[in-house]
Amino acid sequence: MHTDADGLAVRAAAAFEAFRDGDGAGMTLLVGEVTPLLWAVARQSGLDHQAAEDVVQNTWLKLVQHAGSVDDPRSVLKWLLTTTRRDSWRLRSRGHREEPDAHDDVREVESDHTAPSPEDAVLAHDEQRVVWEHFHLLSDRCQTLLRAIAYADRPDYAGVADALGMPVGSIGPTRGRCLAKLRAALTSDPRWEMTS
Image (cartoon, rainbow, N blue to C red; front, side, top):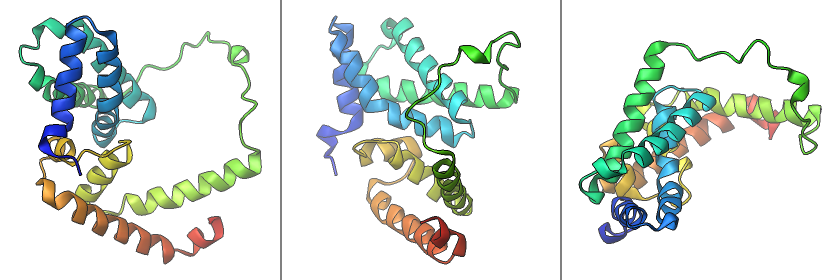
């Protein structure tokens, strides 16, 4: 677990300050550190993969456009989280996404030579479906916490606690209980044995 001095908010502030001072690597570092948490916030708001991707990308664009309006670099993490939440809610409340252009030619899409075989794709889909069915039966608190931690390369408990409004000390034990519930549900489901 990181100390407060190494917390995500502190690292984000330092990276953002470097960016504003003209160091482009600061933005690269900031994006790498914070994107997993923004992604979790967007997905937890109920957005699908593509909509969440759009919201997170737009959040970064807005930060670049409004970098001068963020008075205190220490508030950049909260600014990013708030922007992501608001845009996610706004998109979700509209209740629809723009459809692809009817004139798009699907033949222009290149084939993926690394794609799995149809059999492997079906097995992977079945396995994912079973996991997500049991995941959605967990409490909202468990779902939110597991999403936030799953999308972070190095979970920063201080940043996760701040984003989710949980005490830092409860994150590890809560995560353990949530994973234990998910594991127990999966092992008791005969479909899981068939896919594993």
